[in-house]
Length: 128
Ligand code: ZN
Image (cartoon, rainbow, N blue to C red; front, side):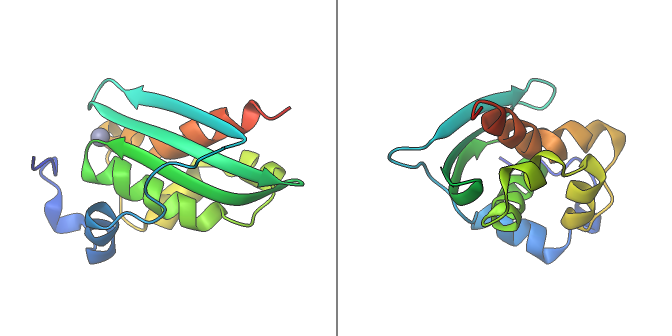
């Protein structure tokens, strides 16, 4: 399935690399929290499993399917948040996530790019 939304020339190689070889892909055996959500506009689906030690994210895995932006963004996110505190991740702004992607995201693709952080924050909210 090729779903590049007509903006392929804007993709940086590392976005495609994350899409083709997602980091921290899979599931955790005994996650402390897990959450799954989808983006009906595009059909993207992402599940995040998180293991929390103290107040830090000790390990994280994601599983999903969908467009390159949604999957690459989730892959990048898992790398960025490992070792961070739950509070730090809860305070991550959408802008920071988009900046981390390093490419300009059109309005129709925002939900794709932000699905990962939405799922992760929802998962972390379960740990209270
Ligand atoms: Zn999408």
